[in-house]
Amino acid sequence: MATRAPGAVIAVQARARERFGALVPALRVARFVLAVALVVAMGVVAVRYVPFESLTWWLLAPALAATVLWWVLLARGWSILASGATTRADMGLWCRTQVLRYLPGGIWAPTSRVVLVGGSAVDRFATVAAENVVSLCAALALGGLSMALSGRPAWAALVAALLVPAAASRWAAGRTRLDRARVHRATTNSVLAFAGYLAAAVVVQAAVSGMHEPLAVAGAAGVAWAVGLVVVFTPSGLGARELAYAGLLAPSFAHADLAAAAVVLRAVTIAAELAVLVTVGRPVASPDDAPDAPAPGGARGLEQRPDGHIRAWRRRARRPFRGRRT
Image (cartoon, rainbow, N blue to C red; front, top):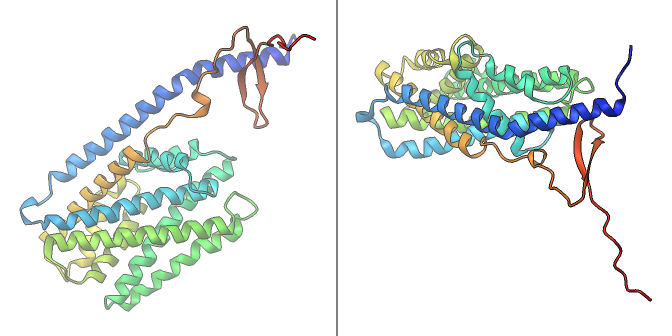
């Protein structure tokens, strides 16, 4: 059976890559527009139930700032785990895929990151799993600590959740890209992120009902966020997170105030997500998307890079030597 020469195979691959490459910028923009539309739709749904007449409006500004900080740090945590550094490309990938959690099933955001992040199959699954475990443990640890400081000492046991990522990194080191230093940095980053989220929850509850029992509010917000993460059958933990929050604070607040604060916090987080999405998550031009500049008299060729990708290049035409005659 006749086989194609290696040069012919490379040429076919290069032509296919060029044709697909011309569509990549348009696909990125379309995906970004759909992501923004989905977040806006969820925001409209949340705002419909906001009790505007009873809010202390000026408190929502610091709450939004703290929530934006939380969201940016979550994106940074993904970047640290995926590449070991804070990069715009990794943070943008996280922002654009994170909106898929609003779809029924609740698994599409991590599933999409498994597909899109680079590396071996083990690296892909380990990175996505580590992102969720680190966030879950940070939320539980800060929530448990806050609940314990509010007068419920049994909740202090949840602080031990921070030991889970460190223990898991010992197994992952050498088998995946997740070495101990990378997991430690991601865990510290996640703790800082959820400190911002808990602060936002306290300010939102104060905007609804005044500043009462801030430590209990912070603890309930952290634990409730963790509950929403593990209840995967609801989009973005919708309903489960709010019920957990209201249930944990029921002895201390009126039910109407808790329901209102839960809805307002959801609306604030959606607004923060939209703000970060249109700044950090917007598609940017990639060097690989730029077409090769034509050179006069140039000849088209092919080059195989060390990473295995094929790209087209143009050979510059030789210019005649214009030296001074002697």
